[in-house]
Image (cartoon, rainbow, N blue to C red; front, side, top):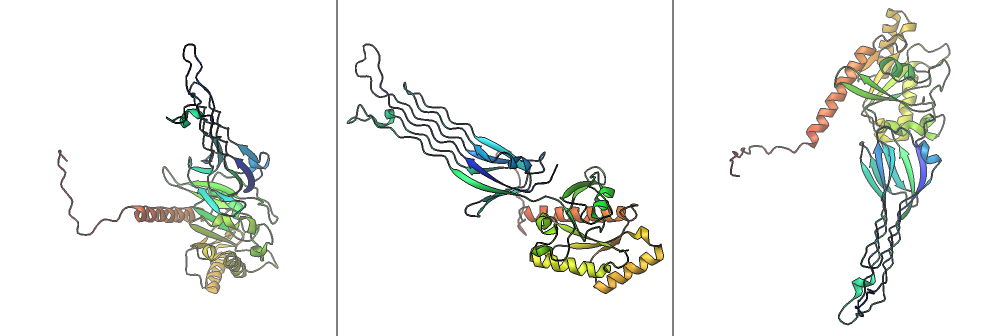
Length: 361
């Protein structure tokens, strides 16, 4: 299925039902009085995150989404039925904007999370509610209010622990195939990857992380060149970036260090946040070189860049070095998760004594 990460839709909440004007008419009861019931509330529109969805493609075919209108009130003090809410499933990671004001309404980041995007109309009031000692036969009523209408812009940003970036043909798709069950297209020409791919890397029970592969980035991507700009945003939610570099470029190709610098400039041009993310250097295609030459080139690239962070030499084709890489990534992902958990936990008050528990408390 083609990856679709943007869509525009219109949502219309249900109008509230009108109140009713009615009078009690029964034999032997000449002055029955008003008995018109209230209307029902209109249905609201909610978006709900669904882990089973991975694109916004369905919204390309259905752009109008309307909740049910509330029923009108009836005689005998019968209240109209409320309109049913409309719940629209969207992929996890969807951001919702008001298309007219460009305001961010909310983000759906966890499975089952709900977001109200259009409030249903309030019910109308029947004439029974207007009776009083001075107005015993009211004929006024209140109609239901209109439901909220909104034009929405939906944007899907993939949720992954690790993001891959690099020039076309750096071996990103080959790496994700080697370490996960994802099967993106791999070929010997640039821009084989045309849309993002997600893969789950499992290293045992309870030890896994999600890795995202986006189309290759070329010089000028931040200004719109190539396919990278459209999908760079998917790296904004990753905690770690793997910068893949071809250690054995074809004759006449750019040296690995120059490739790294160009990608760094594109990241900085796109956003300071993305440029400041933790990034590891992964030198790929060591299978094309003998071990001594591969080690020598690796040392040259690291020295030329003045690289201070983690660096790995791998072959995505044969799998050499990928086990050490994924183990290091798993350790780092677990470390970040633990740090986030501790940051969210309530801070303990230093020096506070624990109050003994008593069964009568």
